[in-house]
Length: 624
Image (tube, rainbow, N blue to C red):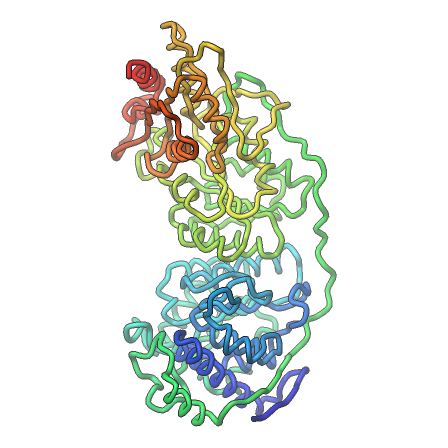
């Protein structure tokens, strides 16, 4: 066993020895775990050995060093290779590699996550590492003005994901020459050959068409790899994409370029033979290059936010309150940045764009990239708010699902929600968004009903960990609250109440205004109704709801401009079920069926969530 310690990089003729060690350790760790993707790791070993020993600038003992480069494994299933790199850097022990990989309650998980301090974002859901890397590169080039590079290793199978091309298009638009994509073109996917196999010329044509610079190399020729990666040190005019022709399972007789080995560890006996073919175990330690010294970006905490104010009774769309509130927050907090999916004049963020254009990133109609960029910016300490129509956030559902795995804070705003948007029709109506976000681990879901509460909740979102979501409406509705009101997350507001209340009406957004109108109609019939603004859907004010329902004899009507599953009604039911009431009379009004075009009033009536239907449901609870 060879033991060497090198802290200033390797000579080029020593890189193959490091690559052999990475291959051996990838085999050893996956065989020990009884699972993993060793062949996908072996194909990229020469690429990573060259990168980590001669080009990656990283202080391994201090992963928070501001000048550190960033290494993202978009092909996260090649985690044996990444963890072998960490062992070569001396930050993961051989014992941990052999006994901690893919084991319960250990940090070397099957796909890398930020449980490890050297990992920026969780990967493994293919097509996400490069888009996330775009966000980090945006921070480095356009906000921090820092010299660090973002190196992203991707697989060729990933290039079937549309998000990869969204990423390259965005990187080109923002001239992210600090972003280097290394594509491990090993030809074989999980079930067989990829669509293009080793047709690197077609890959290169596609890359160039999206505005990046393509370089084709032999991914096992360390001299060619070294020369290609060195281009990142020069004056690039476009983002660099290195297309490396590699062999899956490289170095193992009988396994090289053979299908049927994807995601399969080698049995013990075969593993021993493979390790012997590679020259046996090694303990080479390489620290590579240190990062340039730069000053830590100023991240001073914000001062007092002076929110915009609105006159009670004036009609203001909640989406129109979002932008001014975000601009007010940004004025006192330099960490605030905004992104939008080419609808900023509709989502309301245009006010922010006008005030702070240098802190706004247009993602065009690329919602996956928008959420991914927000993810990358979040890893750099920015408070990234991303907005689009509520309906279109569903395109980024997988990126939202991965956000808790990446331990990032995302702040999302979905406008034009529900059938209330009217004539645009069902393709534009967000009717699933509350359920999607609520199902995300650790998320917060907010649905204000007026401009004042919207502005206040924007500031609340700045301090909310995890994924938070603000749902806004298209139409203008009367301002209900004065500037002195506070809106804590998990709270609610009672807008009408009396000791004689016979039924509780719960709404949020547009349905709150319909509930208020219903209460007026009921009052004219001698029926008093308590009206609750459930502006915080997750967490919901469970205690307040239970008290209201108990006070109104167990009678409650919940109305929402959303499908019945996973939205406001589901949250209310869950809150009431926590401490079941003995005599509950609940009516849940929600959108059922596929809407069409019409006026907001026509569609609210069609959906059965307008004031008339709410009042009818309230009367029905009294008859039960």
